[in-house]
Amino acid sequence: MTQQESEKTVPTMPVIGQTAPAFKAQSTQGPINFPDDFSGKWVVLFSHPSDFTPVCTSEFISFAAWDEKYREADCQLIGLSVDGISSHIAWLRTIKEKIQFNGHKNMDVKLPLIDDLSMEVAKKYGMIMPGESTTKAVRAVFFIDPKATIRAIIYYPLSLGRNFEELYRVLLALKTADEFGIATPADWHPGDAVIVPAVNTSKAANERMENKMEGAVCYDWFFCLKNLEKDTVYKKILKK
Ligand code: BEZ
Image (cartoon, rainbow, N blue to C red):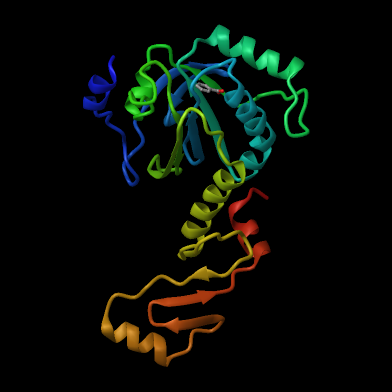
């Protein structure tokens, strides 16, 4: 496909707030029937361009290193690329046997890695972006809640490895917002102040400024912060 042709092809992608497309696939951990197999759980579904490539290899070591933290947050990581199962198995074995990155070695990748040679799942999720590649998925990350609703999406191009602190922060922030009915400000991490949701009537705005909310600081009617202790957050959003 030429550059001009690829620019005319507009990939469709599901958006935040929609139900995540259902799919059945083979993975390195056996068959997957999404979302039925993950009922009641958060899922982070991510794609990578290709097995046996360096940025992807560094990312898989990082996904494996973070996997336990996602499990503690009751969240299943699921990877996908437009490669077959044999390639996935050979690549993950090589990673375990030979590759070291960021102080990690002998990394056993236990999260399922989907065989999407047909590109069926990648196309459903808008992971093929022809301007980047017509044969490889970009680095997409879909955060999907226990009701199978897409709650956040992050896309990176082929050349850019993901930020793993940020991916995990997004999951914790989404779970915290749900559990406590708050929003999270810029650069929030557990233990930082959170945002009390804005009101939407003049009466409520007046009341908010007149009646002090216990534990909250209001700089104006639309900008109120309150403390939310790290332990309180972790108790609610991490498995006991
Ligand atoms: C990589 O993972 O290194 C990579 C994969 C596809 C295109 C460019 C880089």
